[in-house]
Structures are given as structure tokens and as C-alpha cells.
Amino acid sequence: MANNKNIQRLPQEEELSAEDYAIIAAALSALGDFFFFLSLVKGKETTQAEKKRKTK
Image (cartoon, rainbow, N blue to C red; front, top):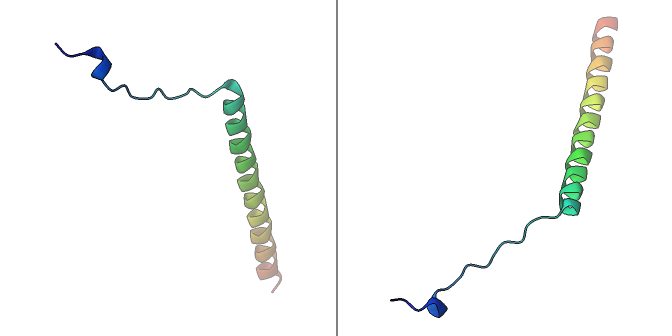
């Protein structure tokens, strides 16, 4: 019979707290807002380029 003291136990992973999840959510939200801003800038550039082509 195996001795229980000799069995190696894996270290338990610590669970994330509510504050950790809030920080992760805020970071993902900020990243989403940044990409939304970039899409607005790209849309404005595209619109201006189309207007210049029409006036030529």
C-alpha cells in the first residue's frame, strides 16, 4: 500500500478575485474603445479620399 506522505501534490492554482476580473474587463473595454477609435479615423480618411476623387 502506498504511503500518502510520499504522494506529490500539485500546487493548487489560485482563483482570480472579483477585482482581478474587473481589471481584466476594464482593460478589454479600453482595448475595444481604442479599436473603435481607429475605425472612426479610418472611416474619416476613406470618406475624405472619396470626396477628393469626386471633385477631380
